Amino acid sequence: MNLKLKIWRQDTSDGSGQFKHYEINNVSPDSSFLEMLDMLNEQLVESGDQSVAFDSDCREGVCGMCSLTINGIPHGGHQGTTTCQLHMRSFSDGQTITIEPFRAKSFPVLRDLVVDRGGFDEIIQAGGFITCRTGSAQDANEIPIPKPLADDAFDFAACIGCGACVAACKNASAMLFTGAKIAHLNSLPQGKAEKDRRTLSMVSKMDEAGFGNCRNYGECSAVCPKEIPLDVIAKMNRDFAVASVKGFISK
Amino acid sequence: MALSGLILAGFVFVHMLGNLQLFLGQEALNSYAYKLQSIPAVLWGFRAFLLLATVTHVLTAISLVRENRAARPKPNAEEKFIQATFASRGMGLTGALLFAFIVFHVLHYTVRITHPEYQDMHYILEKNGKEVQVHDVFTMMVSGFTEKWISGTYIVCMAMLCLHLTHGVSSLFQTIGIRNTAWKSRLDGLAIAYGWTVFIGFVSVPMAVLMGVINLPG
Image (cartoon, rainbow over all chains, first blue to last red; front, side, top):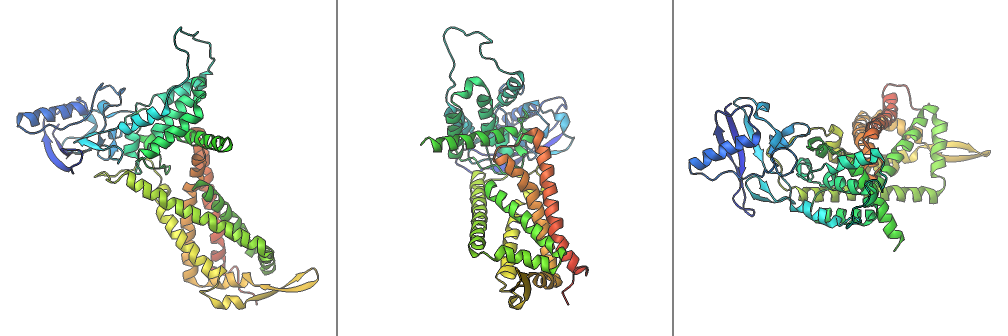
């Protein structure tokens, strides 16, 4: 396959960037999108140019490191997959592919296609701890958890924190991410003790980090590689309302 | 946003039911209108409540949009929507048009500044054996909608209201936290039915006037 690439290049985090055009030939349709970028980088380095910086780690869709908005859609538009799971057979020969970093004020570009998703770490940190006994291992079935609840919590916990939800949202809202983390821990008995405090502090950190507000477009869930449902946002809103009212009454 | 929206969405439905009394005839409509307006404390209390809801809705919308623009200063070179509905994307536009419409609508039929002749329309109602002179809302509505540009603008604005409600009514359940995957499709259906009911209810009045089903008395 021969392809034309339109890639965002930016040298420093405070500088401004621009699109640059590249051509790449003889790409195997069976190679992954990131392997195609590796090929491009080898080509650039051989010709003495600066390689394109992009994030990747496990390359099997579980680590949440790869990003990229491809032709306007984070992770390239295949349902339930990350960029590293995208293959070149999804594109046609001679096609122009636009590759951009995840765009949001809270995700500043560090270089080219690499953005700083540290805002997510701050939200996680604001969530704090859950109460559980450490030391001697407790009996596996000591806390009964209904199967449907365990399944839901597991589905919410599947969030890999890649940030595609923020990038897909026209308002750069992090509510799907924060909702997934809140819904995961608030659903389980182990996380119940800190439920209100966790919800209030994660939501306030999310606002503080400069993420936008939900307008119920549903784009976040549509691009989510782990298919986190919009339910988590409703649950977060509900838990937030309950925690706020409780906080108000107990003052 | 959601709570003020809930109040306003509820109001438009009741307003629509009120308008539909036009089909019951001049006396029924005028007597209903008189009932609504006969206790000044209730009337002005309700007006203040609605004004508060409207102002809250507009101000929260403005602050929401400002925060959202700040959160995403640079758009993608290619902006794509995957599943966002037409109605959800047009909330700002339909909302702004509706606000302009509401201002005109109040000046037109409530303050009656655009058509001062409406002030002189009176009707005699029988109340407990006494005759009371009330405002002739029936004649005012019919003569208002006889003007084609007013009817036309009204119908277009009601279509905007329909769109606005089809997103808003389902969305407010999400915001107050009582929606999940199973209920999303049902609530989306409810919102669409609600929007269309309100649209058909409101639009039936100018349509009836334009088609000559309802005529000026006498």
